[in-house]
Image (cartoon, rainbow, N blue to C red):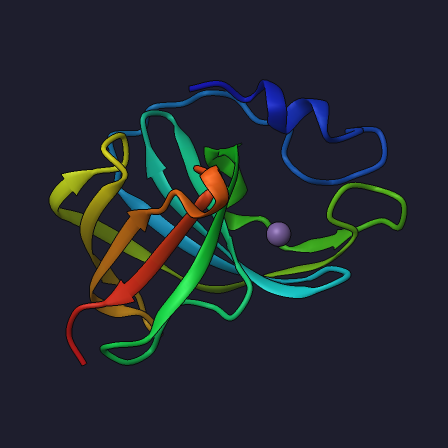
Length: 152
Ligand code: MN
């Protein structure tokens, strides 16, 4: 658990994104941020172990049972990022607009992120119900996960 990668990628004199620190709140929140960067995508983040575990989901989380979506794990983000909205300036990492698309609480049903296999329940406005996150070994790359929706 470290925010080093997060900090290295950003120049906090130029971006308004939170500098971030490791903070254990004891809460289990999630956020989906719509990120209109060079390529529009959705950033899915789960609060865990003092950071936000994060994935870029090009098409967003699945809406129906049976749909599976690629989720590319990215660097852990600081917990304060959970409410971040704004414009990341041109030339900076992730340049573009970030908006909160959904947020709420989540609960672990089974498995764990560390094991690369977890079932969670999301309690958001747009995202509700059970989802699976499964780490793949596509092309030997552990960054690639798949997200499924369990119920319809
Ligand atoms: Mn992003």
